[in-house]
Amino acid sequence: MTNTSLSGRIALVTGSGRNIGRATALELADKGASIVVNSRENRAECDSVRDEINSAGGKAISVTADVGVEEEVNDMFAQIESSLGKVTILVNNAGLRASDRISDMSTDQWRRVLAVNLDGPFFCSRAAIPGMEEAGWGRIINVSGLNAFSGRSEWAHVCASKMGALGLTRAMAPELAEKGILVNHIVPGAFDTSRSITTGLRSNPVESEGVPVGRLGIPSEIGSTVAFLASDAASYITGQTIHVNGGALRY
Image 1 (cartoon, rainbow, N blue to C red):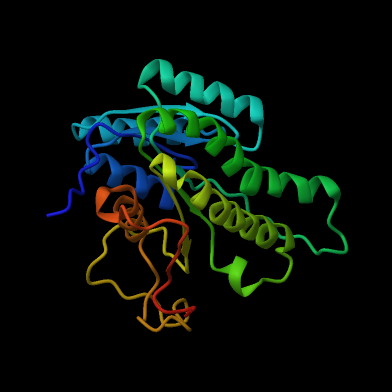
Image 2: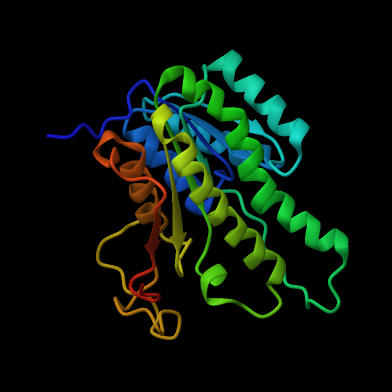
C-alpha cells in the first residue's frame, strides 16, 4: 500500500487562518505534518488554528506575513527554519480578491492583487526550493479559482494573476522534477466556507446552480486533495491542474 503519511514533513500553508486554508492545514496536520499557519495580519486567526492543531496532538506554529512582500516572506522562512526546520510542503493558498472595472483600475490596485496572487507563490517557492533540494523531496501546490478559467467581469487583476500562477506551476514542474520536487495546481470551484462536514449536505439550489453534483464544495475537500498531492501516493503526478468543482467546469 502506498504511504499517505506526512510524518516528518514541514508544511507551510499560506492564508490558512480560515476557510480553505484552515481546512488544508488541519488535514495536513492530521496526516502527521508539522504545520506553519500563516495569514497576512490576523494574528488571532493564525493562533486559533495553531492552537487547534496543537490541542489535537499535532505540531504547529503561526507566522503572520504578507506573501506579496519579499522581505516579509524571507523573514517568515527564517522564523520557520529556526522553529521547525526547512519547509518541504508548500501550499500557496493565500489570495487577494477585489472588484474593479478595468477602465477605472489604478496601477496600484492592479499591482497589489498581482503581488499577493502571483508574486507570493514566486517568493515562497523560491524560498522553499533550496530546502526541498537538500532533502531530495518536496511538494509545491498552488491554489487558484474557477473564475480564472471562466473569466469574471471586474476581476481582470484576479484572473490574470491566478492564470499567471498556473503558468508558474507548469514551468516549475519540469525544472524541479529531477530534484524530487513535484509541483501541481488545484482549482476550487464554488465552496461553502460556512460548513466543515463533507457528508449529507446539500446547498441551496440557487447557490449550487450550474454544479452537477447539486451542492457547493466543503473546504475539507480541498484539504484532502492537497494531502493526497503532498503524499507519496502522488509521486508520479506533477505539472497538473486538478479541478475540484463538482463538475461545474469540465475539461
